[in-house]
Image (cartoon, rainbow, N blue to C red):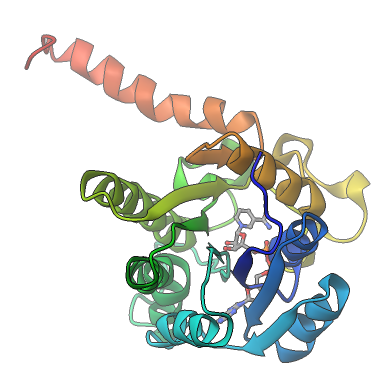
Length: 266
Ligand SMILES: NC(=O)c1ccc[n+]([C@@H]2O[C@H](COP(=O)([O-])OP(=O)(O)OC[C@H]3O[C@@H](n4cnc5c(N)ncnc54)[C@H](O)[C@@H]3O)[C@@H](O)[C@H]2O)c1
């Protein structure tokens, strides 16, 4: 079990939802939490709830993540963990979507590139300071498949950002391992969680939530995240149905290789 006592932790997207729940859960285990979010009032409230600190940040600005890491290292002398959790939704029918929408640049930056920028800054700081760091990136069930339960949501571009951040995390973990860099990388993969992201679509009444989504509360997602970290997992799913959702892709490729008569080594 990880001893979080006294560990300096930065959580992006900590003003609400999963980020706030992580902040409270980590503080309960003794971590010293700093939240960073574009929502100044929300992140200040999170800091008050967990006895931590907060500052405002816009992660659509590519330099902001590295500046946040530098700021915390300068203030506390170290930064043990970053939870790259901030994310935005983006829902459009792909066949009609404006692919030149400036909002897409924000989507790629916040959801996909931002965690790699944080990784670069964190590993550099840990190497210079001589400590080992941990990076926990929030992906999604949309990182792994096109879940049948949400196929009418128009999530294609959001899902592209979440597929992108997963493969970047896999490469980051591989590069860290191969180059013996002092950073462990983990991937939180939430299914449906009732937060500011999903609440507008789901409404307040759980009776109306699609059963197939298996919506959970952010506190449960945070609990599973910390349990996954305790176990040293890279992939930290919050729902069992993620496996079944992924199976369609694997089975499709397997069926195609069989249909094409491809042999084991081909
Ligand atoms: N809720 C779900 O069902 C679900 C499922 C899978 C993945 N996720 C992911 O979980 C993460 C947390 O989302 P959530 O569900 O808790 O929703 P949320 O909206 O409650 O939290 C997202 C937080 O990110 C912050 N944020 C948005 N843009 C930002 C920016 N430019 N700079 C800094 N902060 C910014 C928001 O202010 C908010 O506090 C996201 O990455 C999201 O994609 C959520």
